Length: 113
Length: 114
Image (tube, each protein chain N blue to C red):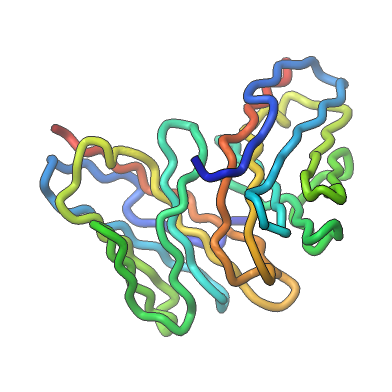
């Protein structure tokens, strides 16, 4: 079953605009990871944020984590047509979950040139 | 390129058959994970190996099995295939203690069962 709920399911913006995707989850986590997938291809790792972190940056990406609300957001600034893809959040829990990732359904981002 | 390799890229087979998917993790990674991506179920965790030992299991069917070899490559065996097994199968790897590290995914094997 899916742990995460992503919002929105689809997002359509113009090049240069910012894109924000949200992810909510249900159980406690060790970390949360964001991935990009282009058209049924492999998953590209974007960023990992640990449960004791609140914000991380990587280039044009900014990820926040609010463990009290069990939610995370991914912000892509100054988007480009090449950012068009599906974006997934994935959570990793502790205990017997070890490293298994539980994925959300994803947000389909379309950036129009 | 994540450094994780998977073969074959595509596989077309018939119901009732058995196939083997192969994965080589990134150099130095001890953990290997298998995931299935289908239209109706999304991305689902199947099984994890760490340094040759099974460490976690997801909703993996009894018809499916996996192993990790001493050289750390892994194979996922799917038998008695059904139409519903058609999906993208991903392998991922991570370094260090399982659970606290980035997982890097391979390009996937697209399985089509006819």
